[in-house]
Length: 74
Ligand SMILES: [Zn+2]
Image (cartoon, helix red, strand yellow):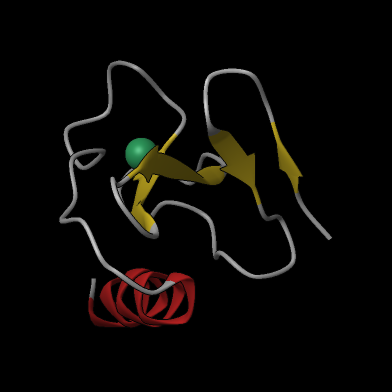
């Protein structure tokens, strides 16, 4: 389960692995994409982490997969 906050941030402790750079919790940043759908950006919750920037993805599943793959490759 995850929650969408007012800022459009979802946290998915079960689906996103911890940040490969600092080990902090990862979150999914969701941006509304007019007219249909959302952009999903997995990122680290540590504001000073060098690895928190990531690409946007159209699908939540793809974003999760790419983030988790990055964790495995780190
Ligand atoms: Zn980090």
